[in-house]
Amino acid sequence: MSDIEIAQRAKMKPIIGLAAEKFGIPAEHLDPYGHYKAKLSLEYVDSLSHQAQEGKLVLVTAISPTPAGEGKTTTTVGLGDALNRIGKKTIICLREPSLGPCFGMKGGAAGGGYSQVVPMEDINLHFTGDFHAIAVAHNLLSAMIDNHINHGNALDIDPRRIKWKRVVDMNDRALREITVGQGGPANGYLREDGFDIVVASEVMAILCLATNRADLKERLGRIVIGYKTDKVTPVYASDLKAHGAMAALLKDAIKPNIVQTLENNIALVHGGPFANIAHGCNSVTATKTALKLADYTITEAGFGADLGAEKFLNIKCRSAKLAPSAVVLVATVRALKYHGGVDRIHLNQENLEAVEKGFENLERHITNVTKNYQLPCVVCINHFTYDTDAETDMIIEKCSDLGVKCIVSKHWAEGGAGAEALANEVVSMVEGSTISPDNLNLLYPDNMPIWNKIETIATKLYGASEIVASDKVKGEIAELQEKYGDLPICMAKTQMSFSTNPSLKGAPTGHSVEISSVKLEHGAGFIVAIAGNMMTMPGLPKTPTAEKIDIDDNGVITGLF
Ligand SMILES: Nc1ncnc2c1ncn2[C@@H]1O[C@H](COP(=O)(O)OP(=O)(O)O)[C@@H](O)[C@H]1O
Ligand SMILES: O=COP(=O)(O)O
Ligand SMILES: [Mg+2]
Image 1 (cartoon, rainbow, N blue to C red):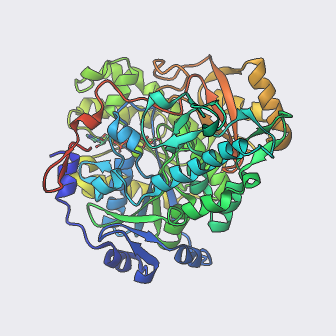
Image 2 (image 1 turned 60 degrees about the horizontal axis):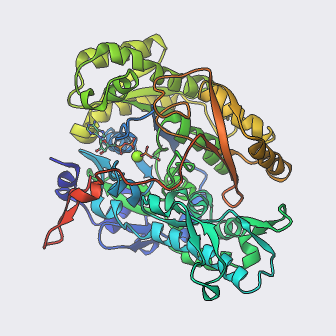
């Protein structure tokens, strides 16, 4: 059965009653969106913050993925269900799916097989409207910038130094570079602009890092939309008086969404930045709420540990004073073969030689988690039906040689029951863990210079020998260093490789990481460093998944996965 067929057969429980049954969440603090989706009130979220008791946080990350993804979301769901099955009160925290990959190539982000959050069609499509609200808030600021210039430009904004683009939640390469203001004086001033996908929006990052409404609005006001004609004075969203209206548009989006897994366990799904072009983590609000309600909070960060996990630790944990007690590093036999040089069409054939060769990718991620961050780590082989025992045994043995436990988990095929061995291992790791926000080993201190922060990430995690940049980019970094040098770095890099070359598989060393541009995201509180040729507006593939999606006369959707 397909993901969507399994999901459509789910025996969902009304979310209001389930939230009360599982965690005593009062109905008056849940805004229902139908029977199976709801938003938690911020009053309730705030009421929990005074509670001293906190549960344990577990991060699910992965090796460098194939284009299909290796199952972090699926594993987060399966592990959460398994922990609940063995009696541990657990909430999972996921990011919301973007329509870009949904209609593009990768598909949705509600998990897969018998480890999914439901209702998956809703979650993968419009959900509760958060992405639309984020896009409108972002584009309101865009409209107010051009409107301000049109009506005399009292702020002396340099139209050639506007950093704030427009966004839409779609993969649409035709919108990457556009010209606005065409058609004569009635339409404002002509200038170059472009669209990013909404998950790369700074408003998305702000929503995910803000701790309450006041913080949200303050961060929105801090957004630097561009510079004055003196080239150095920043123009803030608050200068345009846009931040209040933007915060108003986000009045509901700031509230965490609550849904359930196929096994009727609670999931908080909130915020959705990608991890290759943004920081890749779900919201601080949802994570902190789960920590106050449950004994275990299982959350995921996008793509491989060189991206999502790195930014989960160095941006989200740093900002919100969080710390994972353990890390689950998801690997798949197929991805290791892919890193061992096997073409995607042959990944379902046994190939021990390729597994052995590709293991170097997993080894580097293990080293990064255990040595650079000194975090307890278990490798989870997310089992695919065509994996052979010989392949999985090899991975288990090689992990053992590194002193790391490796567990085969069949949660995709069996739901929570298939992940109980993993759950028991996670429990023993967490109970033995002394990690806390006070002793979490971050990769760099706040006061390290920007250039050195980027260099540290590239050399310590990516295996690079150096970072390089044009004089122009070096000049931009030097300008940012003075006022914003204490901010963390949000690396934007391909998820396909430790390097900036997507085809360089395994664990390349000695490569150069070129920083092609840097961008201050002052509201989010980090500096984006684009490594190599990363686009913040993806394109659709030759055969978009959208072509296979349909809806019948009874409203039943097919083809979504
Ligand atoms: N063990 C598995 N067997 C088959 N398909 C799987 C398995 N695990 C995940 N998938 C599928 O792979 C895709 C990526 O899974 P997902 O959990 O979204 O990965 P990630 O979060 O790492 O991107 C989804 O379509 C999912 O249904
Ligand atoms: O940002 C990417 O997230 P996934 O790895 O879950 O697709
Ligand atoms: Mg995912």
